[in-house]
Length: 234
Image 1 (tube, helix red, strand yellow):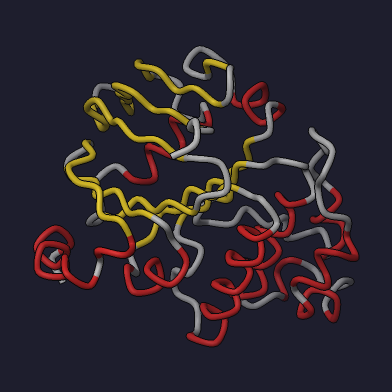
Image 2 (cartoon, rainbow, N blue to C red; image 1 turned 90 degrees about the vertical axis):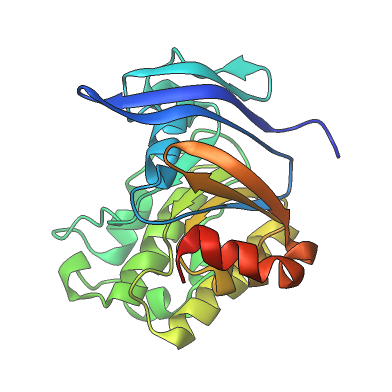
């Protein structure tokens, strides 16, 4: 394995007095797609938010390349080249598609231009002058992903990108993730749909009660189904 791009060690996080993460440990190597799998409330989304500095009360070590992130605010973390796409998507309803795409600042060279994003998501080109409120759920998800691709971030944190979407849109999101991987992006993906995760990911970390409890390489997924069903309750 190459030197990790992201190294998380002993990550703890709290919401108020509620202790959510209890010493999370994992690595993500350059160019990988890695998923965090687990039941609702296991701590998967909190892990992404703690990496990004959105959860402010956190301890432990989060290293991205040579930088320690655990003491940095979220704006400083973003400028190092990490982007977070939240489950709720965060589309600005009063702005049209193109205005939403142009809103985040470019923090690193190498981001995709608007035309390249439209080539990746042709639906957005057709809706480029539509307001955020007029987009379908799938189009909003495409816009949320496209928006972070402009920034030049090389590590993408995607939280439940297929949640509630029609199968045809899920397939398109999957093709997009595969394309981004080929283009050299590194992706940490939170997913409930392990069948979708199996089509795009290299490795799967299982999260339970705020801890990483197992690692399943994608090649071993077929022989680990009984264990995975027990972890996920499916």
